[in-house]
Length: 282
Length: 280
Ligand SMILES: Nc1ncnc2c1ncn2[C@@H]1O[C@H](COP(=O)(O)OP(=O)(O)OP(=O)(O)O)[C@@H](O)[C@H]1O
Ligand SMILES: [Mg+2]
Image 1 (cartoon, chains in turn purple, red):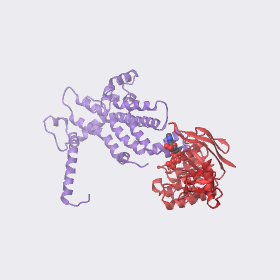
Image 2: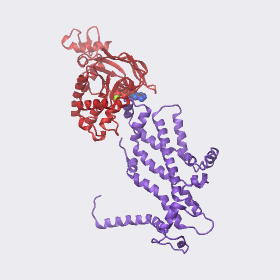
Image 3: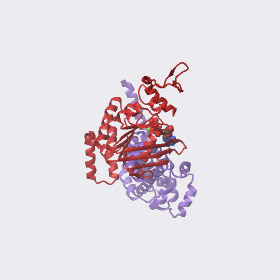
Image 4: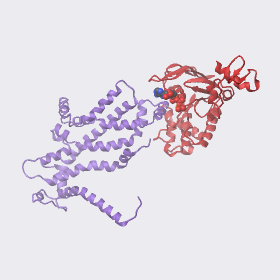
């Protein structure tokens, strides 16, 4: 639509800015809150402009301890979260690439059965199978470990489906051309299939990273050792202090820090992400 | 020297469809053989069996007197050009052509030499760094041929390689394919449903009908002496007129009123041969 009416431009921009303000307001409040001393919140009003305790709060939270009963610094929990999120992301991508590869390109007995079994796991997210999964992980002695944090979350059907669709859209002639060129199964996988699903992998990376980063219930359940606390779950821990005041400034700073990595991933991979969702270059 | 031998080769698809009952074909070295026939007659099936992309259900395929039935496509020393080119979209023209050689473990400098030779022959030298999507249809076709040529295969296989090009380009590429084939002297098996293409390219034609080879011969043979009514009707444009008739003692009886005596030479030539073949 090519129209040039000044008031229309003005109205649409006004709407956009209102939207941005509404969405950004809580983030702004959190940012402001983290710069005031903890006592500022007892009086019942929310400050709207920066205070002067910012440097101190952020320094403590980031490098000493997050506070409110959580004694590990944020950078350390961030590392744990990162290990968990990346573990889940790469694990899921690797497993689903391979299973989709098997299902689409190989003819083996019970192929359809395998497909449906994978399909069924869609109906069983961690929350549903949490008790038996806990039991298994506990029996394997994996409580308080990175393996325990990531492994049960890795097996998933969603990504398998995405790659299956992606592989199915690869023309048969291309597969045959590769066969004539002497590419065995592994060569074909690495030389042809992976490069062709590059954008899909990137899109999935973004989605899965955020999924992994935001895991809450599972880490809460299986970690009791400070050394394995993840950032997102410890925010909840920080809220449940029994005695004394809740140090909101520290919580706000921690929350903002917890938001950073997903934001960074989204911004950094935006181009590939969009391409992966709309792309059809094959 | 015979190069490719198909001996009673037949194909039954896993769903039970009997696509090709039995085909016998002997191809001499350097020959250009064209498979023609109506859609669905089994041209691609036959070609793909030679390529190794479909298994051979019955019979035997030999290339240079070596049995090929159980060999992988890459081990048969053949190269194929596909209808939709099937270039690897993420690789440059150079890599597309080099990929097969790389997989064979050829040293890098040798690959570079080969690719640039073939690229020069096909006029692709300027385009080597481009991706397939940055090429026109005709250029993609050339790259697909280049990819087949760099490997110096014993046999070229083409499955309707020109059907995606416009009419003018098709004529031009046709000439070019034929010239290249002569120059390289590589045995070629070429599938098309375009008769003009078939008649102009082929040393010998194979007319397929429902999976059976109706006639195998030079273009002029097929045109002048079709062995069956099917071939007679299929070759030539506009196609030959066919009239039902009965062969009787008096001659060829076209209707109650009209009987052509057998000795009726000036019309009889063609009619007689045709009748002969239907009579059989
Ligand atoms: N995978 C398959 N399974 C079962 N039947 C098949 C299969 N592929 C082809 N056919 C059948 O075999 C017959 C021959 O097919 P083919 O592809 O060889 O035809 P064609 O001569 O190449 O036709 P066209 O000129 O349309 O490409 C067709 O009737 C087709 O339906
Ligand atoms: Mg075909």
